[in-house]
Length: 338
Ligand SMILES: [Zn+2]
Image (cartoon, rainbow, N blue to C red; front, side):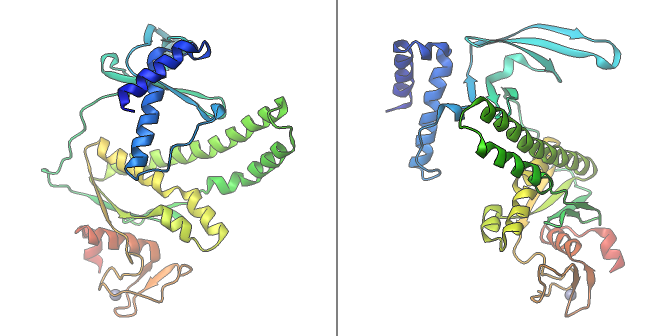
């Protein structure tokens, strides 16, 4: 079936079934679009075969063009507590009260997505089409920073600053395990089961929020200070699968390198700055000064010592300096003191 046939099918099904009529017609069509895209991705070999989605796992609805309206935009509160509030009317669902944190170009909104999180939190996402910030390649970039990601230290910067890994998941693992055990003792789908399920979801969400907040702060800090970001091109999934021990795999997973990279790249691109991914191969074993590969370096060694030229420096710092070198950027400060 083509995209249009699928859409028509969704509409026909909606006509026949009273329950489906609780959905706005365009929202029903968008469900067909999702199936179409999932199937298309399967045919192109990008994804697994689409599976039937269980009702309790279907957590979002999309209003493509119509069916939603913002009204009653008003300012409330005084001084510091001043907020802009608005009411969002969604066809067939009802009203939401929103707090507007920034200007919303209402005419450019291409779709509105309502997302329900397992913890009960609801997000309304307005997708706005906007021209992309242009990269300032013409201008001579002045400052570059290399970032090496690791487990013990989440990020090491080429200027010598470090960010310890806060391991949010590992810290709340005890609570999560406790809740998971409690959940397994409750009767499936009973009221107490649902309550525990929500408590568990909230705990997981806290971990996720903590991480994202930290990453965003790091991204803002770096992108305000530097013009070029140099990152290693990691295959994180492969790294996790290769992880030797269970605790190492957990720590890799807990560090969320992919998300950290995505947030950092986004923050830089948003400000029109340059992101340079460089090959990660042997980056922690190569000597920054002479290029020798130190094969004896193990994961436990915290200090890098070059067997040829005797260059001795912190292991992670060496790695991110090597990254900078691979991107053809040598920090002037370091050249001077070597
Ligand atoms: Zn060396």
